[in-house]
Amino acid sequence: MRRLVLARSSSLLELGLRRVAGAARAVAWRLPQGAAVAAALGVAVLAPRPGEAQPRVVATLPDLYVLTRAVAGPAATVDLVARFGQNPHDMEVRPSHMLLVRRADVLVRNGLEEDAWIDVIVRGSNNPKVQRGSPNVIDASLGVEILKVPTGRVDRSLGDVHSTGNPHYTLDPANLPTVTRNIVAGLARAAPEHTRIFEANREAFLEKVAEADRRWRALLAPFRGARIVSHHDSWPYLFRAFGFVEGGIIEDRPGIPPSPQHLAGLVRRMRDEKVRVILLENWYAADAASLVARETGAKVLVVPQTPGAVKGTDDYVLHLDSILTAIADALREASWRD
Ligand SMILES: [Zn+2]
Image (cartoon, rainbow, N blue to C red; front, side):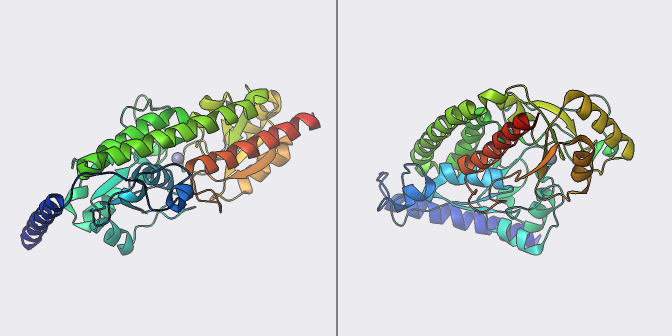
């Protein structure tokens, strides 16, 4: 009861403060002071006027964090729940996560089971703004065509992740217009006075991605149809985007170590189909991938699955640059070996 009263009074207080702040400022837009902020984000960003409120946004996962930061620019503060480089399928909830979410005005979540742990954190945060169903919660997946949605009976024997479809949808640049539209809509609900800033930042960001996408397509054009194996089922969207073919997955069920029978079958298939590259997401142990590589002569390529897992990749374009360049190099090298 006490908790409920406190929550209500604090949101009334905030509403009041927002009114005061709203009355005190004119709606106006200007470029940020100096080019440093724009340069740091890699796009031309608009900034709020000094003293204007910045909503506090929390994103569950690094991919959502870098996308949110790109559209928010300096008009919102953005924090990340999972650490850079942390395996989101294996996350330990801590009190510090709850404290972070307690202060949030907006929560950006994956919408599939990739960040299911956020429900525990949200409950522990006692923050009514970020509970499921609140307009301040952004489901980044809305409107995205989700791949590998399980059909038939779904239970934990299928693995404890990906139970509602493959959640790694930000790895296809073609999904970004939808994902960033969801993020902008949610940010604008929380801070309508910054709507134009968010929209302008989104446009500039999408333009930057489109330019990079043309570069990526040219880089990968010689390798269309190449079969690639991975440790985790992280890449169906990326494979579809760039014309690769999935040559098998080491984890036969996402999040569950593979059986010897599964690995034996995978090795046979890789030999038949001459698969030359195994992607190993850098938070997994190399044992199974190394074994399969020894048996098949394929090369293990350690890659970050999410932005920021490797230094200098805490930005969407830099992250894809690093993955796609590594894949192109490995496939080129394999074609010389054959
Ligand atoms: Zn996954």
